[in-house]
Image (cartoon, rainbow, N blue to C red; front, side):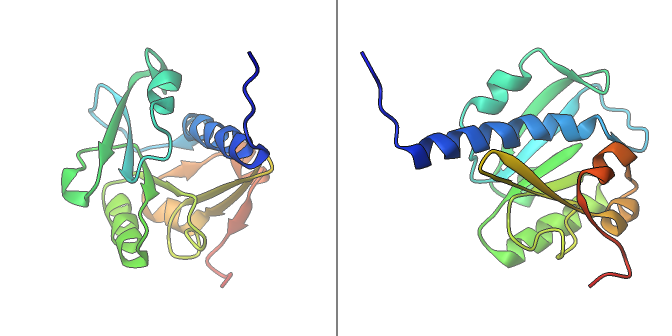
Length: 164
């Protein structure tokens, strides 16, 4: 039996998988302030574009020496302590509130939304034709107490304070 999948849908699935993998990979190049948490927490805020993929990828895995715990939230009030906050909200005001929340709580904010890094988010990730395009707001990372390693900075477009 042969299953035919439209090319556009196949690319979307592959791109979603790459995004899911990158969430964990980014953590290898980021230093957080010391935290008392026993788990490394990844939270998806808003619509979950990954389905069960994150659970499959990170089940029984460790990031930064801690077992990974996944949380899914629709509102900021549902978010507890988190290391990575993947923001997938449709409204610009919702994204801005989530960025502010991430800054206040020392979380690495990541989104695929256009203009995310320019709006104060830390990492804007877009996968186009299975190639990652990474934009990092360095000043936002520093303001959140995070240190991003040079290997990650070297493959990204980096926004600095003196840039618009």
